[in-house]
Image (cartoon, rainbow over all chains, first blue to last red; front, side, top):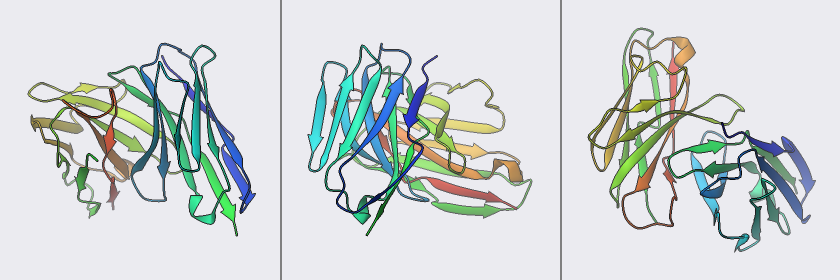
Length: 110
Length: 118
């Protein structure tokens, strides 16, 4: 059964810092990996989707990488802003199922 | 982009009553929808997978008679929490997979529904 782990569980940084969030998964036979943002009491906002054949995806200040063979993905956030404060979830899919990590709670202080 | 709407966003009910949560794909047809439950400061737990026109597949430990799922059309799935009790209080989120279009395998999520059972 696929298990998804995210490290760290919580992260607090000053505004302007570049940061990396980590996600690991136990079964490398994935279809794709998605990074989501969740604000308190809200649903999920998809940030980046990486297909299993891809190595990375970029959107604005966000860059996500995928190393399927080692079961790892990272989400890189450049020049962090207070508005980036949220919980970031990674999820892996085998096409019919999606498993989530517990998330990293990010706080960016002004 | 594809939009998934959940309703209601918040519901408070008395213990013993049943609550229905709707999940609609607004601009695409969803052959498969998923229901998740999220406990405070925890990640999402997959409850069940529903395919249009067939019975839902429940994850281990999820009571199918407690959480009734109906996927009667390609744009609507409903989750009914029957005889709700305080321990059913949680945040419920649905997601939908387009039958056509969208990045392969991409899911789109609703805004979630906060259920509080008194």
